[in-house]
Length: 116
Image (tube, rainbow, N blue to C red; front, side, top):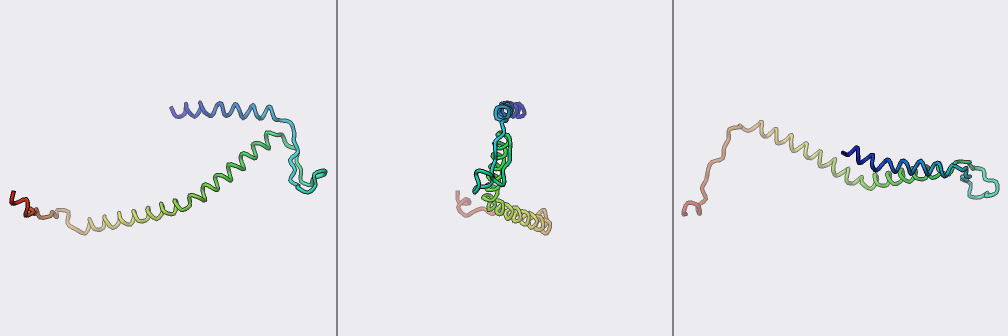
């Protein structure tokens, strides 16, 4: 079912990407020289769809990195809790092995319960 839903969503997206690439295949000049507009030193002739896709990929990388950095505090807390849980499990197992397994607590009746 999940594979079908993925295909249902990704197929139209893929079709739109292909249509975008076919419709925007004319070459454009990508200039990385902000000082010389007439004869730029760093200029490339690329199809427009390549520029668009590269910009999207750079945006995804920047957004993913920012999200990863913002969640660092949560990852640190999770590591500390995992370490504490491991230590408490070890201590519990050690205490279980140390005490006899047939130990029962004495049955005590509270004083108020006896009077009823």
